[in-house]
Length: 137
Image 1 (spheres, rainbow, N blue to C red):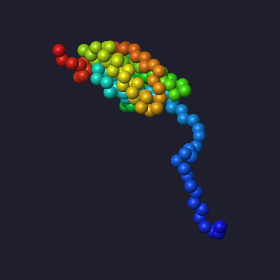
Image 2 (cartoon, one colour):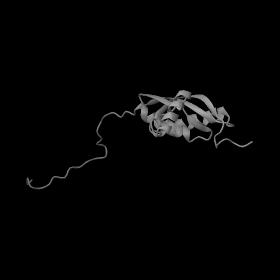
Image 3 (cartoon, helix red, strand yellow):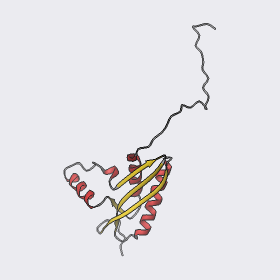
Image 4 (cartoon, rainbow, N blue to C red):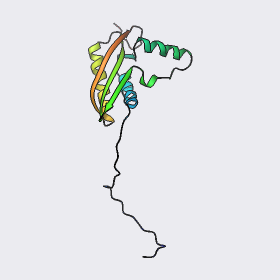
């Protein structure tokens, strides 16, 4: 073979590099918050103290600080996620229906990223009385 010729290497689809993939807790928190916010009847996420500090941040122009993970914590171990959410429910929406829908939405979202949702724990912290989503009687 002439040294000036280009050699062609064959690459097979089975040739995949090894290694590990880890998904951070923060990524799961963002996924869970987006899924929970998409459920009708969820006014917002976060407990009283978190909402107070976020309202202060909103007033001083830092309204995006912490928004992606507000009201959520998650822990990922060996591809399994445990998610804890704190919700504010819109007035007029039944708590069991909203929390069941949130649990289903968060589970589907987490699992769509290749993780297993072991637990979706929800604490309803407040009811929003003046949200536009509230059904009219």
